[in-house]
Image (cartoon, rainbow, N blue to C red; front, side, top):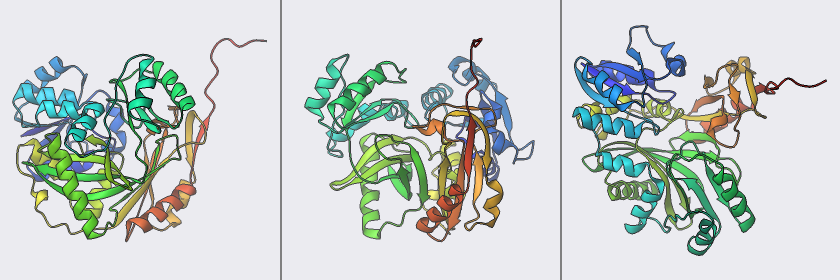
Length: 412
C-alpha cells in the first residue's frame, strides 16, 4: 500500500519513511527537485522509498499520476507552498483530508486574523486597502507600531515592521516593488517573546505536544535565529495556553492533523502570529521526535490514512531537550564553506551541523529565512541548557561567502 508525499520539509523525510514502514505502508515522494532532499536521501537505503520527479504544481498531471499509483491510500502535504495543491488533489482523489476551505483559510493571514477577532481571540483586525490609501487607513484603523505583510507569505518574507510614518512610507514603497504570493495587509504589532505551539488535533480535540521558543533578530526584522524545545512552562500556564490553542483552532474550523501555531506572549495574554497547517519546519520535527521519545511522523501517516492518531493519547517517554541555531553568513554572496566544523566533536551537547545550502549556492537575502546555509543542533537536559550548547557551537562556526561574480564585459 502507498502513501504519497507531495514535496516535504527540508528535514524529516527519514522519520516519515520509517513511520510509513512501521504502519505497513510504502512512501512515494513527489518532487520537482530530488537534489533538495539529498541530505535525507543519502542517509536512507536506496530502496527505502520511491522518488518520482514531476511538476508538483501541475494539478492535472499529478491527478493522472496518482490515479495510476498502485494501492494509493493517502496523501501527505506538509509544506505551506503546496498546501492548496495537496488539498485539491485529496479532494479529487477521494483521499482523507481536511476540508479544503479550512486549508485555504489558513493560507490567508488576513482572513485568519479577522476570524479570530470575530471570535474574541485577538485584539486586532486585519486592514486591507489599495494604492496610496493603505498608509492612511493603517494609521487610522491600526495605529503604530504595525506590521505590513503578505497574506500568503512564508519564511518571514515580505514582512515589514513600521514604527513611525517614515518607516511606513519606506515599507509601502518597498512592498510596491515586491511580488506577493497573496495580498498586502496590515495588522497590529504585538510585542513580547515569540513561541510556536506544536499541536495535534483529531475530531476537534487538540493535544499540545510542546512549545518551541523562537528567538528572533533585533527589530525591525523578523529573522528567526534560535529555537528550543520544549519550553518549560509552569503547568497552570501550559494548561491555559492549551485551552486557548484549542479555541483558536476551533474558530477556524481546524479539526484534524498537526498544526504549528506561532504566537506572542504579550502583557495582555497570547496573540496569534500565524497558523500553519503542518508540523514545524527546520529541525522542529526532528527535535520533537528526540525530545518526546516517539516518532511523531507516525501520527502524520495515520492521519493521511484517515485514522485517529495514537499520539493523541500516547504516553511520551521523553528524551533530551533540543535547540538549534540557524547559520547565516556575515554578508551576501556565493556560499563557499562552513569553517570550524571540526570543533563540534569537542563541544558539549552532541552538536551537529545540518546543511541546507550547497557550495556554490547564491545567498542574497539575510533579513529573513532565505539566508541561512544550515542549522547547528544540540541537546541537553533542559531547553535552556540545550540553547546554551547550540549557541556555543554556532559561535565556533563561520558560514563563509565570497562576493558574487561580476557581470558584463567590464572596462579598461
